Image (cartoon, rainbow, N blue to C red; front, side):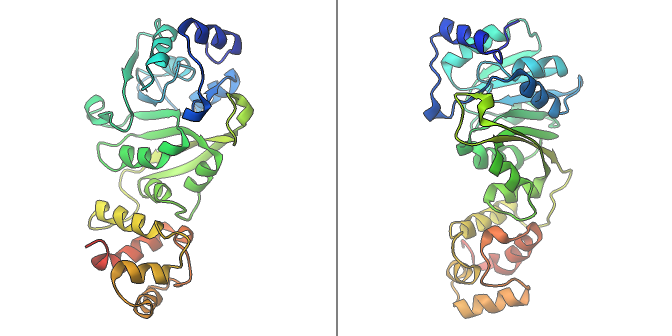
Length: 281
């Protein structure tokens, strides 16, 4: 079996398929077999699980996950990497390869009852959109086990909603940072360290709102002014004066001088209930 986590085997694989790694496209591939195996084990996959791998590349994580699960769908968009992926996984009978943009991939069609485990190494520019795609609608996965930038993992596991993606994670899942992964473990090495973050999906959302689409539009609108104080931002969004917005914030015990990245999930829920009627209408 070809192991792309072995640098020598990787070089030969790339040469056979005429592949040049492009840092500018966020193509950073794990070449540390021990860490790769730790990431696969960190997903907590069993032989009864179906797995969706996001951005499978040329199969570094695929070959470690496949023996652990019942069925694995490996999604990759790059045609050159797909050819290498097919070679690497040719002896893995439970692996299905799908050439697709993960943001357009019909997850529900492949996993109609939900409950799958999603794993992968996620480029920074996809994290927010991908989390919303995977968690906003049912049927939802059971767990997400993702390698992301370390700072992103820390934000997702924090108690405050430092970004729209963080709020989405906290609404639908419980996040824990499993371990960090040094940049030197990748080829080519990225500029920052990464981490494995595990998201155990909740059976029910952590908050109760009338319309989650409306809630996330509200959160996104506030985050568009992330450097501004809440009093001024909510006054503009709700079409009221700063004094009126500050008074409303006072009634729900939120300091109007705070900024959106400091809010906890329960405060977002309260803020939405207090200001949503005038936002985005």
